[in-house]
Length: 638
Image (tube, rainbow, N blue to C red; front, side):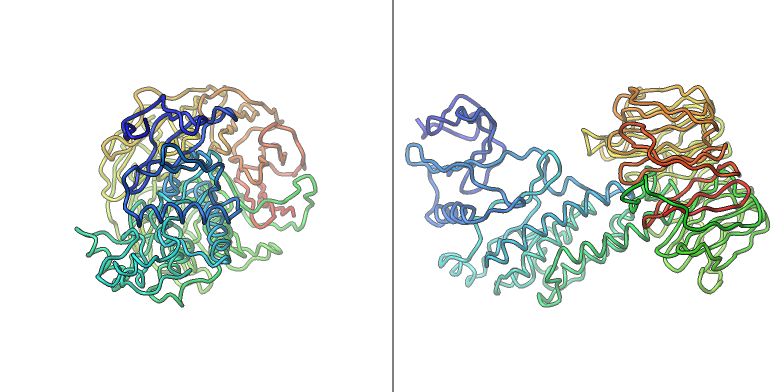
């Protein structure tokens, strides 16, 4: 009998002569959601079943949810498959979502893949909200649990039990009780005032805040303390809570959290798309592999790689050599040379905008930071200069040459020097230093608040980025290139760190949180030998890792297993790191070959030949491919 069913039942009960209950997947005050098997259509579904003994107001909420969903048809809103009743208990079935809560897309890491997924999910959820608001519907209880993801990370808004205020809840509001979830409640809702579409947008901002930072907007010992903060206190900037969040995303989310409803964006998607534009054009291309481009993924590639044509050619005095890489902001790009100069040039024409001197070679990639550019030379000096005015903001002296790009993490700069130390700087002042006991050639890589650096004695160090204390270290082999790191394809709460060693062995480490600390599994996930020295950083995209080496080959492997996918042989050695954009892998060799390859297949769609060999890592930005030659010549394809 239905009256015997409790939340502990896991299987064997049939509802409506059709739905076989498997196990409960969630429970609220008025209903329980089950994973169920539809014996007619032979598929799993989610079945929401009203509790047997519920208050009249909860029964009305359940009916209201059914009626609301019945009138909405949108890909971002959960839809009803079927409605039924069994032994007096009402239920309905809907799509079973297996991608987790929307908050599972974070906390954000400083990675182009993370930003793309976060902004894509946020835009789709914003579309769903715009659709219901256009119908005059206000959700009133948006939380991470009410925005679920399918297996392909497309969001669905659900749980419409509070879509409008009934007479009963108006009475409760008048006595000081407010329906909703305190951590995601707009100020006007917390005060018991009028709840409207703008209130949903505030809750949406609070959901995105939680997803991006891993923390609620406000926290307190009790609900009343949280509600007080929503009404009266200003949220922290997201990058203060999670330094990996770009300023553009932080500003966009905070717009939804304005105290006055009229100050919140009316068009949520427009706000998010504007943030995405800034991230793609300013944040991701601004620094080398230790930062947002750590996977070698560059947004903004040409729609048709096979139609790329030379746009302009220029030359700089001095060689442009490894480990230099092109970095860019919205309208400019930067390159250093062995002549001791860092040049900032215009993307549109290649015209030199400004030159910044060094006392020695500049081969470490520079980093744009708003109006400033941070660069280092073989003289061991790190400089932060306003690139428009030439004014020096700060400098920091190390005791040996620097060949690795400075890595920005929030307001901290991490510099790996050949003085055998990692320097952490804040406003140019030392925050901490960590000694590795060997020189470092690759940039520090940050993930989950941990800084990873490989030294030339063969040790990989995992350092707490806030304190400079050692978390763990493991011997892997001498490292000259910057490792790559990405979320685990099938376990997104974990990460895979790909460490290329100079002698050609590549190790993949599975990193997981253990008691709040990021640690590797006991053995490497896989090891692969490319049979040639490795000076180029790996690229990671779409569950694949791409390796370039001095064996004159590029190998594509499965990220989770290290199994071969395809191999491409070139005339020259790969010293420049491969880069990926729009499913295309771009390569440049020391023989001057420039290739655009389908990342999934290895099929060459674009090729050109430069007179000088290439050691500097190219860049893709705003539909352009910029490739510098070793002899100082630079070619732009558009």
